[in-house]
Image (tube, rainbow, N blue to C red; front, side, top):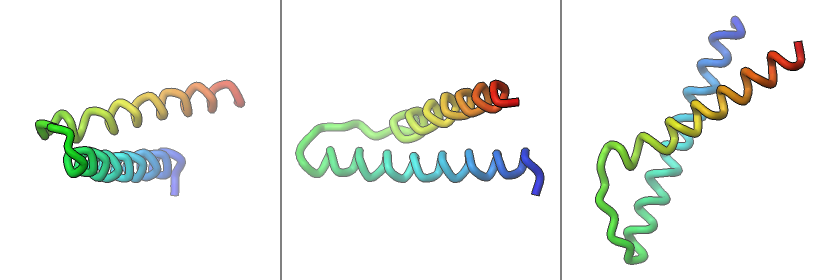
Length: 66
């Protein structure tokens, strides 16, 4: 597989894992008594921002090593 495809698969898997962890964490907070208003933004934005930041760090690191 090409480097681009591997990178996209890695970022997609990372986003999916962070999305699921975020859902579990928000659900756990609501179970223990916190009042949380669930919306698309509360589920999608934190994993999306973390994937963007991690991809920028990885790109910067790969540029530095070459």
